[in-house]
Image (cartoon, rainbow, N blue to C red; front, side, top):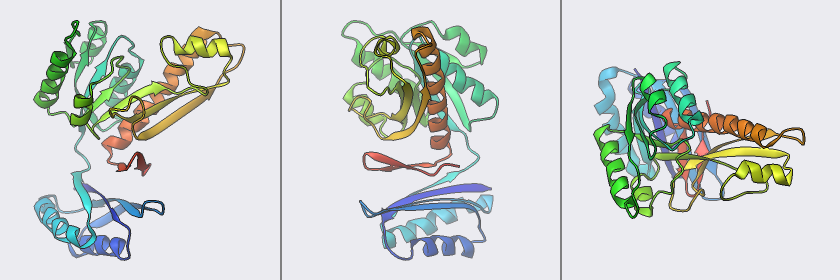
Length: 281
């Protein structure tokens, strides 16, 4: 059986030796090991993928629980083969949703999309063509709190590990952001310079930008300012009209979001304050 161990702690001598020694004494074979020491914060981060006895999970949990106080470890142990259960939220734009569903079906992402939630009915046919439940939860005037309560109910019902905002064009409340902290990923455009509000690609075309991009990040109450997981950029020029920029933007959004979801599902992303450490595979 393949496991993934992730940990962070104050940086000090002996952490790697202690972890590798613990695994060796339990006949576990390390397949991949990555680590990073942040000199600015004094924190150490580590991800280890290893093979071990399928029946040894409880023993390993106990061993790491005993080791944790010695190094002040914040640690997690995962079954590497278990797919991450994902609930996707969308509005009307279907490019990121379609990309994630295709990658899941093709075996390119170790995820199980358990449901799709939308404030519009438009993407029901696409979702159901993949055999996935679609929940239309419109937002009535002054009804945002009730709608978000329904969203949380679905997250719990489907036992979702991760919520992905795949171009969900609504701002989540601070309360919902707090409840999904570290387990919700958003994707948005990221231009240089930045353009806010409606029709950002048309604004960019008017300004004659040469570089457009997208950012995938964890959701926080600070709008579009959560810890960044991945970014993607593409060059554009004067020969491309606003519709061409929209098409390029959709492509980079899909790429950035797919990578972020993949790395989260493979337990490669560790939070480091307002930033992330990403052990890319």
